[in-house]
Length: 74
Image (cartoon, rainbow, N blue to C red; front, side, top):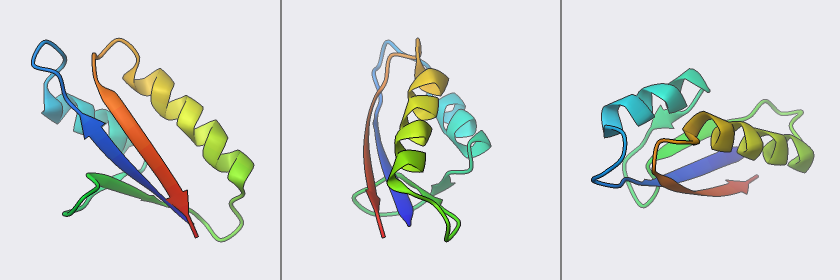
C-alpha cells in the first residue's frame, strides 16, 4: 500500500522546505510527477491505518497555512 501526497503551498504560509522536512520526518519521500511525496506502507497496513496516518499528517501541518490531498492505494 502507498499513500501519495500533494501539497498546495501558500505565499503567506511556512516555507516549503520546512513543510517537506516535517513530512519527511513522518516517513514521506519526495517524488516527481503529479504527486509530491509518497509513503510506502508495510504489507500489514489497513485502511484504518491510512485514516490514522491522515490525522497525523493534519496535526503535523496544522498552523502552517498549507492544503494537502491524500490518495492511498494498494
